[in-house]
Image (cartoon, rainbow, N blue to C red; front, side, top):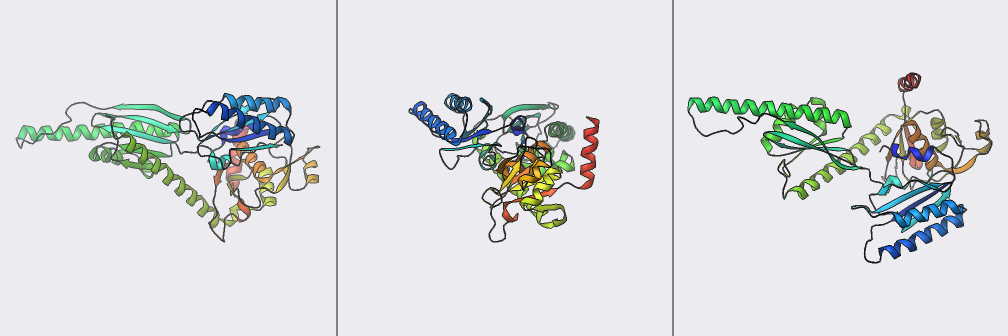
Length: 380
């Protein structure tokens, strides 16, 4: 999971008001319930020590936020009297609202509730071309069009020599059009970094496009018999196929990353002390978080900078922070991951041999990756 959208939270100092709100209910009592919910959340913030301007900013945001289709909740992050970020949630929080006032924003719940769909490129194919749609956590949009040759594209049943020649021309047209569609799909995937490519259309058409795609893209491809360039009644079934493909991708990716973690002990870190050291040195390539693990809520000490974190308060003073603050280990490590461009994977309990032990772990950057990052910084 890429959390770059959280970057604004780490561009200013705290303390932070963090609210995760259940907004799935909508009925005639919605305005009154929203008002009551906002009031209760802000009273709790003030009780935890929040300043009045920040509490008021959160209250105004909670009462003004419109309910978006498909939204199950909303997170609000505010500091110094200003709401900085209010992302929608894809699943309902466990309670009507979860409130915290802390030195760092409380972002770990987003790993369970934030919209985290892989980016999906859908190609609606027919014999003449294709329309491409991009679906991401930010919504859907038309991505591109591929227009092939329009004649000849229909075969006939005659065995006449001229008709045989015509049928060969039809085959050639289909092949060229499939190649044109595949080229547009390839360019769109390169531009967007889409995680999945869904081909919708008749079996022959989508198979021809599949076979024309670069070999490197084929593992990303899912074919569906629902949907097509003409649209129509199969849209709902297509949406179901896309959602299934997304969930399969998330599960497959999570398992692949956990397998890497288990098979490369020399390139991993577990336990808060080791992870804090790796974060200070910007060596975390991918952070694994199990929010219910005991290490997640262990106390560490942080400063204003992402690499100012330590297990002991006195250690942080040596890093140039005269007034360190206590923070949860998961929030401190997530800040480091976001700022250094590391990926984050939410992992779940697997039984007596939970990985990572304690709930926090990381795949570490190799030395050549560190050198490449240093060269990139020098070029900037």
